[in-house]
Image (cartoon, rainbow, N blue to C red; front, side, top):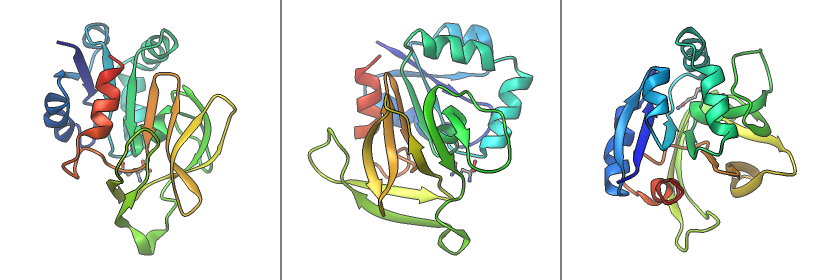
Length: 187
Ligand code: GLN
C-alpha cells in the first residue's frame, strides 16, 4: 500500500488521515527529514501558512521538501498548504517552498466572507465537488506550466503543476474523498 505523509507541523493535519485511508493509502505524520524520506507523497494541510513555513524552516525541512518535489514526489496542498507551495505571495514576505509557478493572495475572499461553501466543477471529476473555503487564498496568476482545475468567481482555486495538486478549499472536511483519490492515484 502506498504511504502518504501528512506534514504535521501546524494546522488541521489529523483530518487528512481518514480521507487518505478511504482513498486507499496508509497515512503517516511527517515532522522530520527521516519521516519525509519514508513516504511516497505528502499532504500539506490547511492552517496558518506563515506558521507552517517558519516551523518547516526550524525543522530543516524546506530544502528536503523542495528536493522531493523536484524529484516528482506527489504533493497535495490545501489552503495554507497551497500558499506554502506557491512561488510568490501577494503581500508580506513569508517562507515559501516555491514549487508551483504562481502568485497567491492570502485571505483573498475578504473578512466579511470568512468562510463559505459551494459546489465546484473540477476538471477530471464528473460531478461537482462540495468545497469548503475557510479564510481561503485565491490564485492571482499562474505560469505556463500550471493547469487550472477549478475556478470560483473567475479566480483559480484548484491547480496542478506536475505532481503537485493544490486547492484553496478544504477537501478533507466535506466528506468527499475524490481530491484525495486524485492524489493517491499519483503515488
Ligand atoms: N488564512 C490562512 C493563511 O493565510 C489559510 C487558512 C486555511 O488554511 N484554512 O495561511
